[in-house]
Image (cartoon, rainbow over all chains, first blue to last red; front, side, top):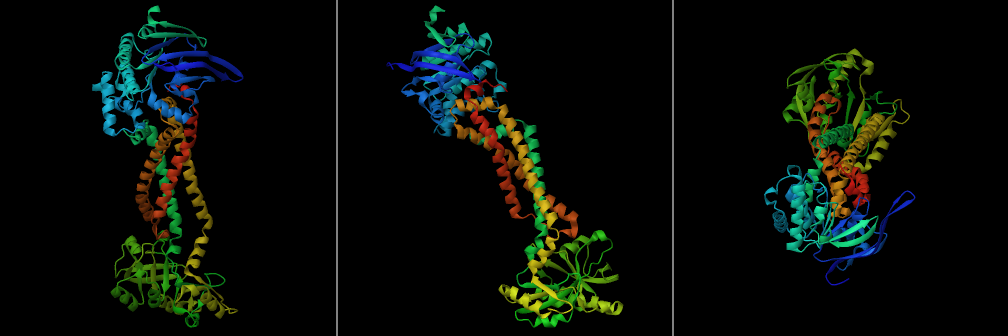
Length: 233
Length: 385
């Protein structure tokens, strides 16, 4: 892996099985992601981009190939090791926010820190910093049901960054938002990338969202077709 | 924020469903607690029996009497310290529904032998002096509002006629498991009346109560007593007081077994109810558990969340059920009158409540835990409530 590369994917294959049928999803995928890069994965539905994101994030396993994140090949980790690794290294942002409805914004953001050895006071400090970073310091005690879609997604981003992970993965982060909220979320992600140098890997259908990325990779029927800089859009 | 907080918040996410489940557990444990207490009440006499006492009765059946003359011969058996005797009187107070145990006993020897019945000395002396006097247990006196000096009339069933008694004393149990619902009067009063009205039934004893010096010699003493009357016209069976009382309990063996079975069936039913609630809740939250996994929560933690929620629900029902058992038992005892002289919720019943609730909580969560852990994160995230 080159210096400055944070993710290195090599000869990745993934297929799903339905009865006797084998459906190939990813076919011989190899590419690197530099530390601090903002990558957008684009492609039509069923092209395998979410599967690729899940594999990079360690929530699914490939049929073959390797995924090096830093010095760790996540494809070789057991489920238990993967859970620990994810807690330390990956921040997740989902299309439908996936906040826990019975927990406040503060408690949702605090969730990943429960697994850490931080004290209660330290956790509180971290959560407040994360919520301030997404502009929701005044909404800490609100439940998800009391927030707008954009605010919910910002809470989800705060939850993703609160552990200071190595990479942020985002699956259609603006897919459930109106245009204005979507722009706010993309601005926030852009800021996180610029200011905090967070490596972001984002799956999106939205060309406007992809514009914020440094690099755009296209997938079609499980094959990586090209890697574009954003100005090719 | 702590895991416990998540457990409680999750448990009460569907307040109505959780509330109804807790109510079901409460009712089930209440039923279980009462049924166990009924069973314990059946055995209360056995628990209260003394190892220092034997009971001698007619070998054919307890309904056949023994001659009073056996008394002196029994007294002479080595190892016997005291002999008392009595008859089941079977009198009815006003109405048959007012049932209580009533015995004709030899008062002086009886109270020497049954020291667990505590009666003030002045009341005891007054009872000894009055041939028509009687003493009653505290609960029995309270039940009918009897006071010292009151005249009470029993209608004889085994010994026909109207029998008038004057209350001379109220006894209390030295231990909580003592029967405080017994009515005792002078055997001499019964015997002398019989001499006038039914002379053939006089000088006949229903049973002998025998004090022994050494419980370890109970078997040999009993054998020696029975040996005295072998091949006589009224052979005897002598057994420990515990065995004698157990003999009565054994008559209701089928009923007790049925109650015992029902009490366990109640627990099985509640297991199904809780399992259903937990399964529904967890299934609805498959997506959330996938999020927890994504955030790094391992299998044990996910299992802990589900198991904890199930235990929170069952233990809340358990707590309310236990709390409700005590007043319910008091009300039940009052309603059942003298049928259960000692009706007390035993600590063992409470422990069984707790153990069964915990077991139900754990068992109910096993399948939901297994299913949740089996779901792949990517599949779980795709599931929408």
